[in-house]
Length: 65
Image (cartoon, rainbow, N blue to C red; front, top):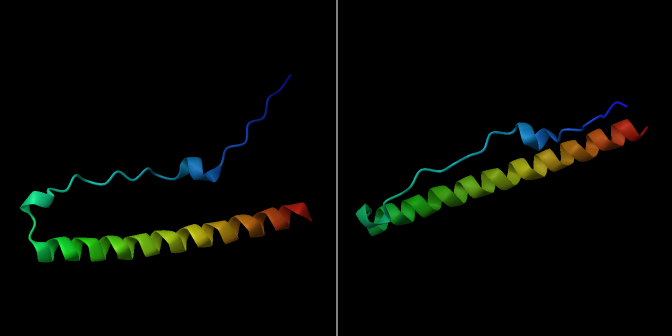
């Protein structure tokens, strides 16, 4: 009996591991800049999630036909 396994494309995505940040060594302004940069990255990640979700829906619709 053959077994077929379906791999999710998310399994192929690299796992991001952020570097440790020494907040104690940062000034208040550096901390604010750090937060602003993180917020930009969060928005970018949300945009990619939305895009990938739309791509998945489109692919599922294509293969249903």
